[in-house]
Each structure stands twice: as C-alpha cells, then as structure tokens.
Image 1 (cartoon, one colour):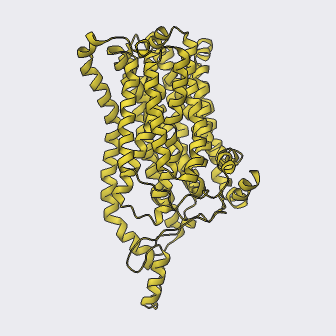
Image 2: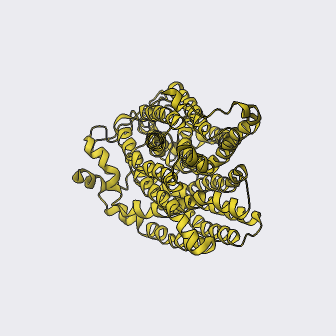
Image 3: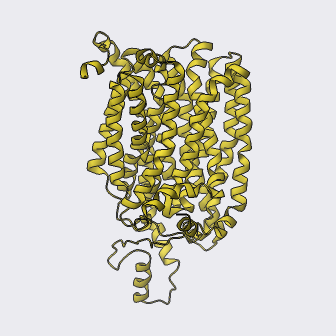
Length: 547
C-alpha cells in the first residue's frame, strides 16, 4: 500500500534543488517572522517604559487626597490587586449580556502573565493562524502538475482550492464553540495535530478522492487559530492594546495566501508538488512542539459559556449573523478578502500568459500583495488604537487621567477602514488595466501592492471592533465574520475564469473596484448607528432564547 502511495522519485534533482528550496523557505519565514520580531522588540521596550506610569496614574486619579491608607488598599484591591500587589482573577457570570455597552471584565486586566510572555504566547498562536491561509494557496503554482499526477481536470483541481477555503469558514464555528467551553490550549493542540496528519496524507495521495478528503481535514485543522486566536487576544490584552495586538495576529492570515505561492513555485519547480505538503507538515510539527511546551491556558477564568448547553455554544456564531453590527462590519472585509482570492487564483495564468513568466517568477510576484498586506495590517492596528485613545483623551480633560472604557467608543476604530476602502479599488483598477494592455510589469505589481494594502487596512479594525463589542464571545463573533469572509473567498476563484474570458481583466477589476468602494456605506452605517444598536440590542438574552 505504501509503495502505491510513494511519491515520484526526484533524487537526481535533489542536490540541484537544495539552494532554491531553502531560499524559498527562508523567504517565507523571514517575511512573517521579521515583521513580528521587530514589533515584538519595539512593543516590549515601549510597554516596559510606560506601563507602570500609566497604571499608577489610573489609580491615583480616582483617589481623593483625604482618603486614608485603608481606603487606598480598598481601591487598589478593586482594581485587581491585593495589598501585596498580587493579581486577582475575575470570573464571568453565566448570564453575560453579550451586547451590553457595559462590557464584562477581561483577563487582560487581571492576568498574571508578564508582558513579554503575552507577546510570546501571541507569537505561537499567530504561527498556527499562519498555516491555514498558507496552505490554501501554496500549491497554486503547481495545479497543472497536480492535475497531471492525479489524472483529473483543471476544474476539479480548482474545486479543491475553493472547498478548502469554504471549510475554513465552517470549521471555525466548531472550534469557537469548543474553545469557549473548554479553553484555548487543547483546541490549538488538537487542531494542529489534525493538520499535520492530514497534510502528510495530501503528500501521499494517489487519487483525487483521497486528496480532496485530506484537504478537507487539513482545512479543519488549520482553521482553529483564525477564531480562537481572537479569544486569546481578548484574554491577554486590554482594550487600548488590542488593536495593535490584533494587527500582528492577523499578519499570518494576510501574508499566508500571497507568500505561499512563492515557496510553492520554487518547491514545485525543483523538487515536485508532493514536497510542498511535506514542508507544510514539517512546519506544523514544529508549531505543535512549541504549543506542547510553551503555550499555557489563557481562558481558565475568562470563558463566558462554559456552563451553557452544547447546542447554545455551537449555534451562537449563527445567531451573530443576524446582528446588523456583525454583518455590516464584516462585509467590507469579506468583499476585500474575496476579491484578493480572485486575483490570487487568476494571477498564475494572467502573468504566465501575458508576461511569459515562469512558475517561480509568478510566485515572486505575489510578494507585492504580501508586503502590502503586512504593512496595512500593522499600520491600521496602530492607527485604530491611536484614534480610539485620542477620542478618550478628548472626553476626559483632567491632567494625567486615563479615561475608562466608556469614554472609548469602539466605533472610532472603524474610521481607519475608510483608507482601505479607497486603496483597494485603486489597486484593483491599476492592476486590471495594466494586465489587460500588457503594460510594463512594474505598474501591475504596484496595483497588487495597493490591493494588498487595502485588504490589510480593512481587516484589522473590523475584527478588533467585533472583539471589543462582544468580548465575552470573541471567538464566536469572529467565527461568524470568518464565515462571511470564507464564502466570498470560496466563490470568487470559481467566478474568475468566466469573468476574465467574457469581459477581460480591465473591466472585471473595475467591477470589483466599484463594489469595494460601495462597501464604505457599511462603515458609515455602523459608525453612525452602532452605539444605538449596541444600546438597544439585548444580544445576550437573544442568544439564550434562540437556543
């Protein structure tokens, strides 16, 4: 049996392929890790300098000078510290109103993890979040070889890409429900183990039926961090830190789909498509080891739905899809992500046909989109945090005062998305018409960069806003948003061939650009009516009644 599944021999080419193979993996790693490491170092230094001062000011600003030492101890204790300076923990009640404007306390306020430990935990979680989007597109440059090896049509191979992305939207519903009942750590470990096993199965597949089955399980295992990671961010970081943390966490989902083809193109050209999946399995195994030894449970005191019924946990994400705040906030990002997959799926044919690029050169072209994604995710996270804190400072004019959360309206984050709504259609139009008329490759790649930048800018404030509003159920609400995103990303690759043949690249991208621009209406509606909807919407009781 194993002999039947043994991949084609490629030993004569192995030495020749070693240098570009390692270069591709190095490029893949450096793109993600360098950005994260720089941010990790800067944030560690900044937090070390200012955290103690801010904490001291936040306590002293509310203590009248006439109070004696006993009053001081009482107030300090109410802020999560004992008289010995030890952190206290806070438990959720069983009947949290998930849409109340008075948000439940977060573990971030009372966690005993150090600052460096928080960012290291987020780093590990981000690695798992990197695997899913990476695996979705890493073998796109090798679809012709996969088709010939498995003796199937191009249409059926394209279905494996769309099916993978669709499962990425459905499976997180399960992981979100389980994480809110049983915590985060075991979900991460279980999902990563499923990913490693199924990825090896993809490499050993001898028929399309086995390959599709293994891709389904691979997608299930790789999808956990996309929603559970949002819960981890809520566990570890305060509201004022959350935008930046979410931006760094979302680097993986943004960079993966566009950097993956770079490594995939080199591996396929020099070694063979099966080694693409062996490489992914190796990365997954390394991440699994990190989780086993260095990833603690962050949700032990924070999970809001541990005592609710299993049915309530599993249906909660679907109930969120009935909330106008969730749908309107998610729509701009869902469209942007879907249109990015439209470009990703059609890019190999477009560039190889019109610019005569090789498989590895097509893979390198994805870098333009990937760099734009990374810059957009990080910058928009910082910008959204700055806008939120500036509004809070305007609402509290007292010197050296840190305003409470009620002075930080979360809708302020969404204003950062408007820049992305403008950049995205600009990049789509520039790329589409340059490819249509075979203009020099540089302007086309510039369009890809602007497109990626727009997607990154739209994503981070959208997810962070949902986490802010529904802190007690962050994994479920991000799961609902992720479902909308994955549906769009699953449909657009199947639409791309027919659209490009019918109206051409220029008009196809112009149509997508007009839809992207009109999604700004959703942002206007949420920023205008969001506070009113949050006040009137008794979402917590709605969820209980719905199940």
